[in-house]
Image (cartoon, helix red, strand yellow):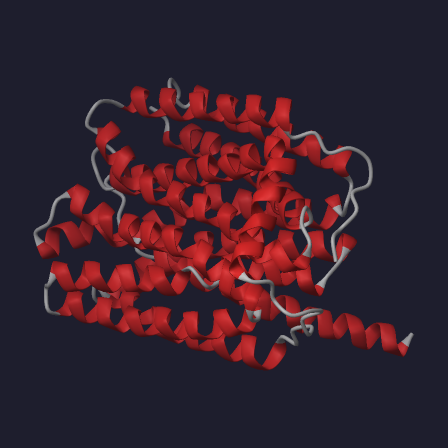
Length: 407
């Protein structure tokens, strides 16, 4: 009994340490969303240029994530995560200096460097969870990662708005502090299991990845795209909401705006954590929850086409969409992470996270472009995408019974 209590206590500290990694990653993007209008005004840049602060970070990360995944499979997860956090935090300082100097080129270059660092954080943490835990513990930890990701999205608009009360570029200088805390947690609280065998040569490794995609690609690739489109919609809607709240008839700024941005995300966080704790390895339950989540997203986003005049109703619909997201993502995470052996897990989870980052990257600029057309065009587009995801998941992702986690 005493050993069990000690093991549970150890799990708790590991969970906390792992949760800091996606939290830091999310703060790198979401904390900047509320200050984008201020950035446009203070630096004299366009809406499109401000959106690139999010987009360039995410594109760089999306392109480098597969490399980080390969390195984490060849060496260790911590050997990739630790230097990545150092690069991520250091580039945060450079981005802040770019803002202080009113230099958009320096700011953009620093954000690209931050993307390089981000590539070795949360995506590798997902593979690390697969190494550390099995069965229900794994799905719970993956649900916690998604909840931590979502918690960052809830806290970051409020935190970004509060920091901006001091001076608009203060959020940039907050990154290094959070990175340092995450770095210490990873170094001292996570005990990574030793590798079972020597890493395969690159040619053999790539062949193994190809074999996995040929064998499981029928459901694995739709799962990758479902995660990507979900994050595209989430960040696009946040960008849209951040812009319109400061305009008439709302004229809501500062912390009040941050609190409103956090409401849909709070629905996602609570649902993500609950979903991760409940699904364990139950494939049938996962299938039900994924489809219910996508139905919620499709219906709520479709209703937002017409019901946007009342802010309370509009935020309520976006919260329902967030709950749908919280039902979907932990199930996808568990299915993808558990689908492969440990030696290839870093690359497979990295390909998944790479597409998620690309979804995040294209959300703000495409939503900015759609805003110039009309509100209806935005929500016709995203509700149609949610419906497409529903079809993909319904017809191609069909886990059944009790799933067997890979060692």
